[in-house]
Every structure is written in structure tokens, then in C-alpha cells.
View 1 (tube, rainbow over the protein chains, first blue to last red):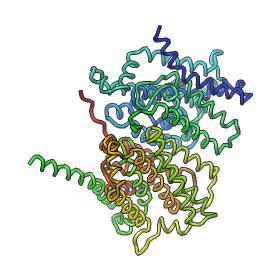
View 2: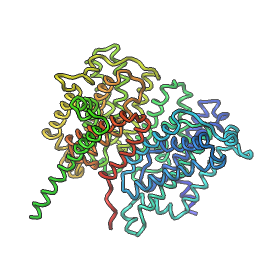
View 3: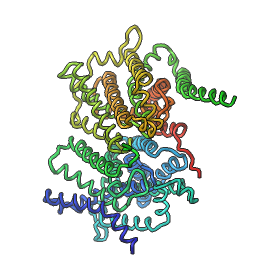
Length: 315
Length: 322
């Protein structure tokens, strides 16, 4: 089956990156193996963001609002439970619905409003994080007891939570990649004009890509909320850049039409491990952002340079 | 006859683009006057112009960048100014104003060059590149201060930011000086011609033997230098650097001002005149937020939404057609 082989080949870059970083971490940090389950779980929200970013990049757009969306989802779900005492089980649904709504708003603006996705999502990122700050004002709030317990134990029915989430992500990607939507997304991303000429509604496909992206950001927000167990209007500083970089490692390009969600998912885990590595090497807390940011920028530059389009060069 | 009509329409559109922001200024001033008498007075106008100056200077740099290409935009202006605030306060404790200014401008130049090279040589999309570099600049600010507030503004800086000469705000004079200088660069030098050419048709510019790369990199460098300089005025106004993200909130207004000022986001068309109006309009809007006691968080929300509204009116893709 060539389809399976193609999938495996596409996941390879992200997987190799994760394995490489894990190997380096394992050799340099003796406690890496012991801490693996917990550091894996901590990396899952970012991983879902990388996945989410891939979906829009495949369709030829970009979402730069992930940091803001993540914080807003966290703020709304925490406020709904702490201030408005919603049902404990509804608590799980709220982040997903919020994510869907955010994705739909972005989709409407970019696809049907014909706006530049870079600028729009950079703008909404400010709007969302501002709203989160309005709702929470400071780090506060609580989550349902059972929810907190699940995340502090890190296991459900004996299965590690991180493994469960990885399986969910893999299933989600498999479902997506065999659906007609996947084929259309790749087509829209690689040539919107040609796809349009074949009678496919380009705007609708882009809209769906943003809605799916929003749903995955919702999952990331849910898990993030579970991990920190409260609301924090200032979390997730590097999320957007991490997600874009993960999508790039996973095979996506800014031009659109390529990319692999599962590869990006794994690459994002690797990127989170990189942060642990930099912290462990002995970089002071207040220098960490600088070093980590520089490392991310160098990686982005490297990938962009390797895949730069001929147009920009021209010489 | 048809040609004449088209020409007339074109002139009117260009004028209209510039008139719109100034019209907004008048409307906002009238609304302000209705809510708090004295809003339309000369002394309050001077106050608004003083507050607008640093944003105006950042918008000048932004104009160069937006003119230079199809998707070029500098998202790191706010971060550059933020870094200047903490860095200048720190440097002024030990060095003179001259040396501090030189270091500040050099830092702006380096970060601008970095942006330019990232975008034009390596091929990273402008928003991604400047987004990343702004994270780096905040990182540098955080590393320098280690979470503490070090140093203060000096009397000279405070005079530059808030003082007046013969009743005219010094900051306004600086802003106008920079605009005149930049207008000369834009309209009277070869570089200015190249910038418009590269922005409107890069392929033709390339074929004419002009390096799009160099034109773009210089634009980013100018933006870096100007936004760093604007940071000095912010330090003079805020007087104490109370964080490493103090000018972050001006990132979006800086981009909005240029687009609202009639400069085409897709490059090659526009100038500074309209931006003066839009910077003033945004500053008056900001002073409304202060009058109605609207929190910083709500301001961020408003600016985010305002950008989306401005994009809807000014920057839309063409409809797909067969």
C-alpha cells in the first residue's frame, strides 16, 4: 500500500527530530528517562498546537494567534467553573467549544473576509489575550477535583495520559488524512486558483481548516488547563512560534500545500524537550527565554533557507 | 474625456486616502469636546501631539518597511522600543546621553538588519521573522533587567518627551524633523525611487538591475533605528522602566497607523502625510480610553479588533476568478 508508505515517509522528519532530541537529552541528562512520563505530558499541549498549525498551513494560511487563543480558552473554562459554577462535566466541553468558535471566527475573517491570515491572527492574538486578562485579571481559579486528580496521577485506567493523547492525535490525523477534506486542503494550499477552476469552493475549505485548527487548539487548552490546574492570563509565551516551527519540521511550508499533522505533533514534543535541555545545561532562569528564542529562530531560519522559494532569490 | 475622468478619480482617491485620517481626527476631537469640555483647546491639542510623537516616529519606520514589498511589515517596533526603555535607563546610569543614544541606535540598526536579512536573504515570511525577533528582543530586555527595574529617565529625556520650546512640544518638533528627513529620503533620493519600484513591481526592479534584497534590508534597518529612537521618548514619558514589555501595546497601532494613513499594505504606494493624521487619531482614541478609565487589558482587546476592522476596509485579497 503506497498510501501507508507515503504517510510513514511524511511523519519521518518530525519523528527523527524527536528521537534525535530524546537521544541527546538521554545522554546528557541522566534523569531524562525517569522524568520522561511527566515531561511528555507537559509537552502535549504544544504538540496539539503544532498539529493545529499544520492544518492551516496545509491550506496555505497561518495562525499566529495560538498564544492568545490558548490563554482565552483557559480563562473562559476556569471562569465558567470558578465564577459561574457550571457542571463538572460541561467543564470538559467548554474549551473545545471555545476553540471551535475561535477557529470559526478566524475562518470567517480569512476565508470569506479575504483577509491576510498573518495580520488578522496577529491582531486577534492581542484581542484574545486581552480578553483573557479581562476575565481572569490575575492567576486564579480552580478545576473540578476529578479533573485535577486525573492529571496529577497522569494515568487513566493504567494507561499513561500522554500515551492516550498521542493515540488520540494519531487517530485524528488518520481520520483527517483519509477524508476528502485532506485532499482538498492540500489542493487549496498548493494552488488555490487551479483548485477553484476545478469547481472546489476554496473559501469553504479554508474555513474548515480554521475550524479544525480551532478544535485542536481547544484540546490543547483543555490539557493545558488540566496540567496547571488553574487559570493564568500570562501562560504560553512561545506557543505560536513553537507551533509554526513544529509544523515546518513536520514538512509544512509557508507557501502551503504540504505538511503533516502527526509529524508536527511529534516535532513539537521534541521542541519542548529542547527547552528542558537548555534549562538543564545550566542557563539561568531569566536568560532561558533569550536562549530558547534564539534557538527557535535559528531553526526557523535554517528550514526557511533550505526550502526558500526561487522567487525571493531571483539572483 | 474618459481619460480625464479617470485621472480626476485617481487624484481624488489619493487625496481621499489622506483626508480620511484627518477627518477622523476632527470627528474624534468633536466627540471628545462633547464629553469633556476643553478637549478641543490649544493646550490639549499640544498635549495630544506630544503623546503621539513616539508612535509617529515608529510609524515612519513602519512606512518604509510596508512600502518595500508585497507582504513586508515590521512586527518588532514595539519590542525595539521596549528594549530601548530598559537598556537606555540602564546605560544612562553610567554613560553620557551621546554614547547611550549611539548604543541604542546601534541596537536598533542590528535588530533591523537581522529582520531584513531574515526576510530578504533567508526567505522567512516578514511577520514570522519580526514576530520571532520581537520575542528575542523581549528576551534580551528580560535578561538585562532580571525582572527588576533599574535606572530612571534623565531631565534631558523628560524634556525631549514632554517639554516645550516657545509653547511647541519638543517631541512634536523631533517627530516633524524625522518626517521631513524621511520625506526627503523617500522623494528626493535614488533610494526612495528604488523603494517605490521594489514595492510595486519587484520583478521589473530586479530586471532594471536594482537589488530588491538591499532595498528591503535598508527599509527594515531604518524601521529598527527609528523604533529604537522612539523608545527614548517613551522612557522620557514613563520615567521609570517598570517592565521589559512597556511599549508592546504600541505594536499594533504602529501597523494600523500606516495602513489607515493610506499606504498600500501590498507595497509601492503611499507616504507619511496620511500617517500623521492616523497616528493623531489613534492617540486621541487612546486618550478616550484614559478618560473613560478603560484598563490596559481592554485596550489590547480594542486594538486587536480595530486592526481587524481596518484590514477589512483596507487590505482584502482579490476574489478568485477563473
